[in-house]
Length: 465
Image (cartoon, rainbow, N blue to C red; front, side):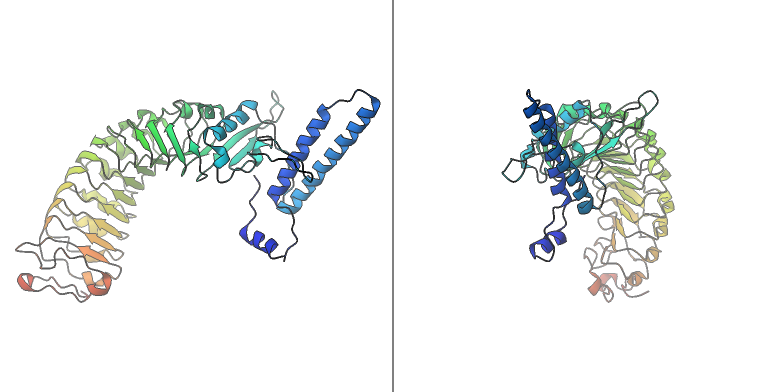
């Protein structure tokens, strides 16, 4: 696919500092028009010798023009022009169907998809007549010749139309791209269901991003045998139903984002089969039930977001076996029980959000072992006792919120040394709490705030150590 002309290039041309030369895209259009003209000339056969001779002159001229534009392509792009391999008609048709189903004539960039009218100074070009390899957002690869099949054929390997103002729906014929590896239609205005057999037909699909649309209906069934899927991102749609249990067959899956939909039901225990999973995001759905213990088998998880659902049960034992976690958010659910001490083994954790649950017991001292922790919010639970004494060891902490619990003074010493801290609220007002309990502190006012009144003398001083 030809690169777009840069803004600097356009300004240089407009200012007259650079000779107005055709861009790589301009050259491709002219080359396609010359190729189409050559095909028409070859198809035209004269009856008399004079007509044949005249037609041969046209063929020679069209051939010469084609070669000329190939030479100019190298000058404009710095790359040698290579004729793309022949594509199956059915794959070309699938792309045409996508264009027509998603109001292609209103796309932000439709280079190569649309033709142009002929003028006295240039040849015309029919819609969809340029090779798909030069269409905006399309990547074409070639098969390798074999002794049994020596002919090289092309196939669509990627459809990348992110944020291109697609409106309408995804046509079922997208299943006719059997060797497609990457599909990105995110950030558009697509509606309706995802074609039910799409994922099952695209058995070589590795990356699928349909996020930030208005897609509805269930999450389609996935290819069941030897799936190569690595990233499935469907967040910010209107999908319903449940997380398909067959997701567990995707043993290469690294990212699964189904957040901000209307999914219901439980987290499937088959997720244990996703042994390479690093990011799991299910936040802002209507899911419920207990988290299966099998989730603890996803030991490669780095980012886990279960927030804003209706999950219940305890955080043990599934959370105790995820040592690589960097971000964990299970806020706004109904989790009960204790906060696992094993969280202290997550040496790379920088974000821990668990506010507005029903967690109880004491805050484990092991939280203070999370040296990279930046954001801590365990507010509005049922924790009791005093905050861990060594919280001043969290030298990277920026936000520390544990209010809305039953924690009591005195607060830990040395909090004034936390130079990166900008927001803190640890305990609630009560007879044993400080007067400023519900106040949020900003850094510029933080270092010299002292507690007075009923809490005076309870080691509640926010000064350096």
